[in-house]
Length: 424
Ligand SMILES: Cc1ncc(COP(=O)(O)O)c(C=O)c1O
Image (cartoon, rainbow, N blue to C red; front, top):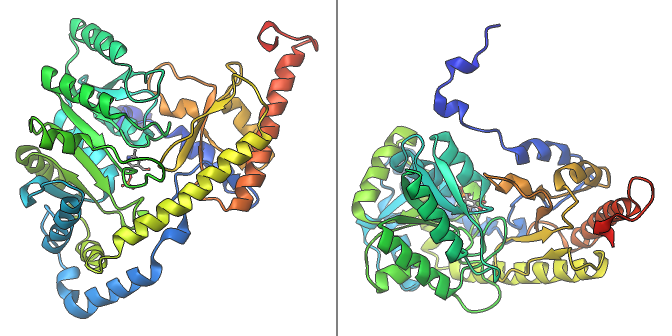
């Protein structure tokens, strides 16, 4: 069999298989408690209301639902989304809106329309793996910016330094990609001050910001902070924010529907890109969601989801306090929203190597290094609190704490049973 690799395009050869997916195959056994996936709690899905909405679409409009639709999206869904965004303080017109087959499609189309091979995007490090994969599949590069010590957004000094260094090196930087609300994987939420600072930076450097907001509505503690899209719209209104939204975390990910807010010329270019990708998002699905939104039940559903996640997050934090070894170099975030906690372990623990031991003890997480695109850090992990039951959270944390405890003990015993300097 001849080597097939040269036959694939450079773009295809630049796509990297997700380490996560490979490791997750190991977690399919029945008794594993998996904190690895990013799955919403199934008990939040409004199954009866969605079934009724689907029936109404078939009763009222089956032929349109089963036909091809406009690439821009279904008019009824767009009208519902304009109502939704207006209720959240935004001014949105149809020309600023594109329906997508959920946010992952948007994350693929953005580098498709902006990046030539070698062009760069600035992004948080670590960041969402799906965005990294999409950028790399167009031979784009990512310049990573670490977060500040306060975990409230970019370290702005590093941003300026790394940006200047890249420019001096001749790099073409096209946009900034950030997840300001309850970031995946870290759970970090950008402060108002940092949002304003990155906005000013983007104006000064004439850069677009891609604001990826799947978790925005899932704030269960504290006050909502305006999105970058809103801050720009109510401030200088430069129109350089492209906001990605999705029904995956506020309704159900199986709907595979999201939307993009942006200036008209960007939306138009994305429409052209989408034509080549899938012609249109499923008309039936769009009409189904529009029908559900027309019931006016989404806000109550989101409130219910927030309540469930707040309880699960609090319970997981309590379990971590109860079972984890108590050490200054073993810490975790306490997010005010979203689905994830980020755990940082003593520097000598490699969470990829430890993963196999965790699976033996029937617990799984996502290795932190999967979220880095440059010089990965190996002593972190992401754990999800939305999916597991309370019982699974307690048992899973207990198992995880025992695996971590064993690693620490083995390290402190040293190769000959002696304490190493790090263990002192
Ligand atoms: C930050 C981020 N962006 C985008 C997505 C993709 O979401 P969707 O289900 O809308 O494709 C995810 C999924 O978990 C995510 O965490």
